[in-house]
Length: 306
Image (tube, rainbow, N blue to C red; front, side, top):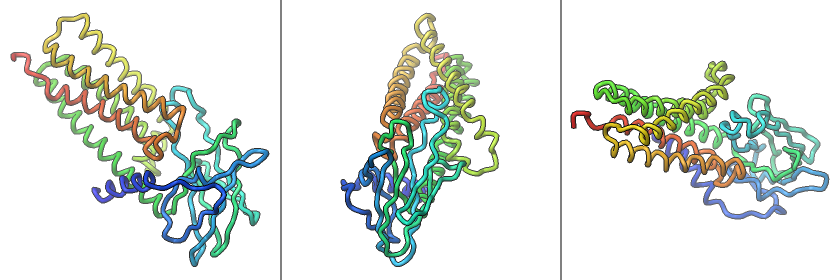
């Protein structure tokens, strides 16, 4: 598991350290290729669409995967973005056509014959024909990245689940109503996080009914988390509660982290690739930290008798 997590962060570091490129030069790739950001190698063409060129410098046919960042699922659930991502399509200079699969519209596999230089045309992905934020992977590197991502997200959800169980136990023993509020809020945020990560944690796991209802789960979990957050703030203002100073600190810290989640989430809507592969992760990790902060507040709540 730790090896997978290390590989996951190594991929992010590799992408962040890649140097600038020129769109006029073909990409010379071989069997040792792993990953690069393709956007800077693409050139807009008259009439719409973009082109790029790849030179196979290896001794056998080169298989590559064109991949764009996953959509902002929370924005989809709130109706801020279209729920129907465009299907990737490529046309090569030797009259071949490649298309993504309906179940995995963010990925497209294509090949370059041994020793050849080929150009590829990508039709417009939206009405504005904006520059697509695309990545080029080798199949092995993308498989390793997705496996590491799955392990990382599963580990975070497992730790939060254990923390939630501990917080429930403490809330019952201490008979703290505010700790119970924190547990409900943390549970809502944890369900929201699990819904956002469901496609990563359960890829092809036979739980299709969960994936179908994923956006509904996101909406319900967001409503629960928001409602409990409002109740926590109102209780702190209008009621003379036990351990007021303690809960004030918990709410302030959670508000700060939740604000960073909102900032990264809105940033991703207007600039989906603002931090490369980390663009998708930053807001979600801030959400995980908010959930952990609220649950820790319930775990360490002082005894009423103190």
